[in-house]
Image (cartoon, rainbow, N blue to C red; front, top):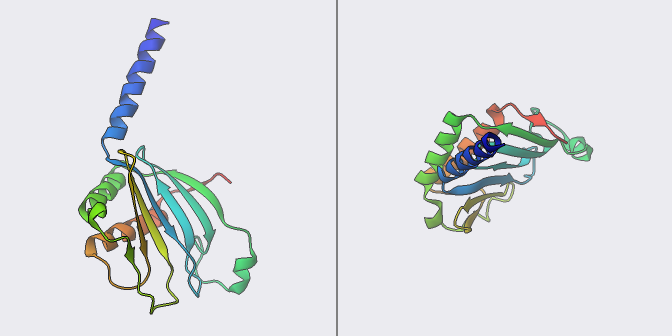
Length: 161
């Protein structure tokens, strides 16, 4: 029994160490519809490298037509981000210095672009939400959300519902 108790303590300490390696409690990126057939989804990445993809439409196929909007949503998927990919994500998030960025990067003159929201949660309980659409953005922010979009494409997603 004492060995079992010791095992639980060691596992608990390891999980605490994992969460302390990152200052982010979650990284979430949501992409809304455009006037065409842009992917509509939300991806949430946790500090334990697990990821949830809530896919609405146009995430797993090329092209499309208006009738696709009548189809049910594509589903909810899960994956575990590889350590190397996760480390790069954290480095890009650090480089973007999201707390110092504006809350909005939207060009209201460009009406047909997807609206996106990047939400970064911090372990201190705070969070930063950045709303974006077409238009100018800091290069480090572009690199971050582009990489998140690439992660969505190159992970092995398992459908959970």
